[in-house]
Amino acid sequence: MIYFSIIGFNDCKIDKSAPHATGGATLKTFMAFRDEIDKVYLFYTKTGEAKDEDLIKACELNGKEMKREKRNIELTNIELSFVPSPIDYKIVYNEMHAKIIELMTTHKILDEEKIINISSGTPTMTACWVLLQQSGIIPKAKLIQAYPPHYQRKTKVPVEVVDFDIKDFPQIKNRDVLKQQLQNQIVKVEKMEEQISLSEIHNKFPAFIGRSSALTKVKEEILRLSGTDSHVLILGEPGTGKELVANALHQFSNRKKNPFKTVNYAGKPENLIESELFGHTKGAFTDAKSARKGLFRSADKGTVFIDEIGDLPKGIQERLLRVIEYGDVIPEGMDEVIKVNVRIVAGTNQDIPAKVKRGAFKIDFLTRLTSLIEIPPLRHRKEDIPELIQHFGGHELHLSQDCIKKFQQKNWKNGNVRELQATIEQAQTINKNSPIEWEDIPPTAISILNSKSDQIPLPELPLPLPLKAKKDYDYNDAIIEKARSIGKTDEEVDSLLGQAGRRVEANRKQRKKQKK
Image (cartoon, rainbow, N blue to C red; front, top):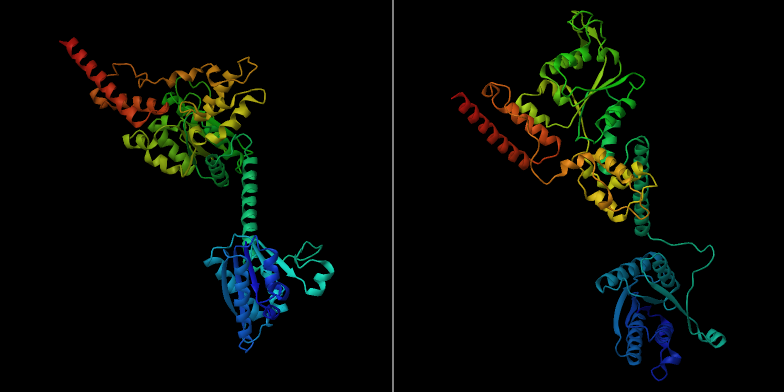
């Protein structure tokens, strides 16, 4: 324990022949806590008067008596300069504050228990001890009050710990403590405001299950873009929720009272796509037995979501440019331009940069889709999986903790949320009283894509001839797109292209042999 005491004039009256009987508050307090004290700091004061010498001598005498009582204590004498006045609060407080802070820092005693004798010295010094202790500048400290002889004879109590546990007693805090507490409160308020803001964002998207930072970013992008009329490209793997995002863009926009149309033209012939999008007049072609308004005209002032935009033929892409840029629609069989006001949202899971590079996707069309939203795959927001399990499975589905952990460890690269939902539906078919384990869940249809083999179904050979005229890359494109759609890595794609090349060469040799 640390002992602090300022030497006062009553401490100067100590008699060497009877120190305990004649000693002042400094020695009395030490004797009361002698067994616990291991370090003593005695402060003698300098006021610029002749009596300063008496205080220095008293400091030395009290220190010697303490050493005689307990030889192993560490004792340090420190000067406090109160020139010109030991009762000037500004002088006394500043000097005591500076010396105490320096002492606790250099001697590394900040976290040690301390006692402070507040009876020696002037009333100004006593008040400053109370302020330093109560404000927390001297931490882990108790204030000790020593009583004069006449009071001791009455109560038989030489010293006593000052108890400030008094009703309505004010708390004293220094500026640095208040500043730190204020800063802590500001941080708490900022965190609370951030949580409230995030909660408000999530509450706007009840159909989006999850509160991960990755999904939060998507929600924030939807809110940012929904107030604009910019055309949007949504990128995301199969099963990540591209249509969900497109629908949210529409619902939060000023078009929400108008139609929202969604189409997917993957695998459809160009003439059918053209008719469905732009419409036609009666008799425009052989099977046009009646006029057709077309998707853009029926969705006027609304939103059209075109899923798998990467599969659109280049001719359709060129015509879409006119719709996006000028709002021009020309139905087949009509020369007149019809104006429409449609917001186009496009989605794809394909590698658009690769398709642009190969010339399969027009860069002019890409530049008209001015905004981009990328939906993270489920493996990049695994913290959402427990909430998704509860959403799809309900409270009745009882999975073990290890099973839930396995759900979070799986990458779900083939179907993302859609694959997760299918797996949970399979788990619901199990009639089991104990918690369901991962090994209990039957495989889903998409599980066949989780084979460890690098093989994937390749397009049939031979390709339509002439093969060389198509520069061999139609076949390669089909392989790349198929491989990308099921989440193959670049290395796996290269391996597949190598296999395909060998098949093409073998096929070429076989045809050459047949011709001979």
